[in-house]
Length: 347
Image 1: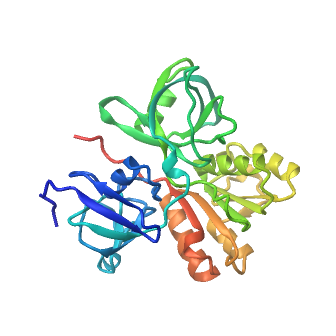
Image 2: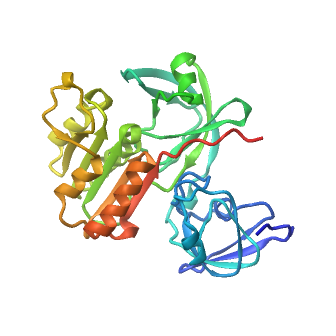
Image 3: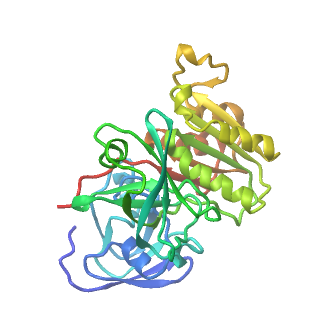
C-alpha cells in the first residue's frame, strides 16, 4: 500500500500510552525520535529487525526492507518495522520504549583526527577530538554516522565508554569497496577533519537488570562490546560477564591484550577468544569453530541471562535463533547490533 495522503497521523504506544504525531513523509521511527521518544532501532534501513513492533489498531504502508528483518508471515501477524513504515491511519503500536534514549539529542559535529593506530593490517583505530566547546552525550554501545561527500553515510560504533570521552574511538576494518574504510586506509591523515551525526542506535547496556551477561563479538563487533564492558566496570556493576570474541585467525583478534587485562583485574569478567580458521603459524591452542557454538557448548541454559551480540548478521541471526530456541534465552534479553551492509548513496 502507498500513502498519498498529506494528513498527519497519530501514533499511540502500548503499554506506555504515550502518543506522538507522524508528519507526511515521515517514518514512525523518525517521528518518535523527533518527539523525544526512545524506541529500539539499529540500522534504520530495514535490514536488522531491531525496531520491530506489533500493530494493534490501524493500517500501515510498508517501505523497503530485507526479508531477514521481517518475514511476510510476521507482517501478516501484525508485525512492522518502525524504521521503514508509515501510518495510513491513526494507529496503536505495541513496542517497548527505552528509558533515557529519547533524552539524548542527535547532533551533527566536526571532529579532528587526533591519532590513527593500526593494531592489525586491516584494522584502523581512529581517535577523534571534538571542538573544545562541544561534548557528545551518548550511551555505551551506540554508533555514529560518518558523513561523506555526495550524501554517503557510514555507521561506526563508538568503542569508548561515555566517561572516557576526551577522544571518541572508532574501529574501522578495511573492506573491499568500502567507501569510508578506503578513505581511512588510503587518504585520511592525523589532524584531518571528519563530520558525523549521532549518537544513534538502541544497543547499550541495560543497567536496570541484575542478570549475568554473555557478550558476543565478531571481528570489529568488539568495538561497542568494549564500550559496554568498560562502562560496566566504571559503574561498579558486579554482574558476571563472559566475553566470546570470534575471529578467523589470531591476527584478527586485533586488541587481545585488553580483554586479557580485564580478566586479570576483574573477578566478574571472563574472556574466551574463538578462532574459526586459525593459521598454522598461529599455534592456536584455544577454542575453535563458530563463536555462537562456543556459547552453546558452554551453557546448558541461558534462561537467566542477558546476551549482547555485535557482528555480521550471519552470526547475530543464528545466535539469537539458537540461544532462544535451544537454550531458553528470553527473546527480549537478546540485544543486538548487526553490522548490516551499507546501502547506496541517496539519489
